Length: 158
Image: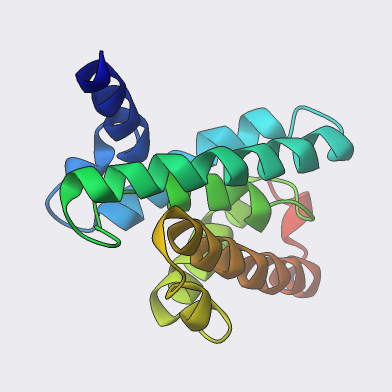
């Protein structure tokens, strides 16, 4: 039974296996987050916030256990954190084709560069650290996307 649960956790932690892609699994995990954003945005803002909080909470044990099963502290193949952070990016900006492109790019920039405090959050132990740094990157990307959308009028383009 333990093996079943470990396999289920790995399946979730790797974004239904997308994390096993040998090149840039975090990038593919980020893309995988866009359909999740679309689904979440069908609900009112308070529900969106609850879903984001729920994803963060369940992501801690999923990412922590997946990392342990993969044998490293923060393996690239664990992409649940990228997937779960994408709804944060679009919390204040509606998802359209142009915002999807810019939101994706902004998130990848902040996820890779990890400006403080994201770089410090990444050093937290286990699943909490895995989830926290990407959530912070999501917050940075949300602000950058909102500004980009306002300056260029991206919300009105479909």
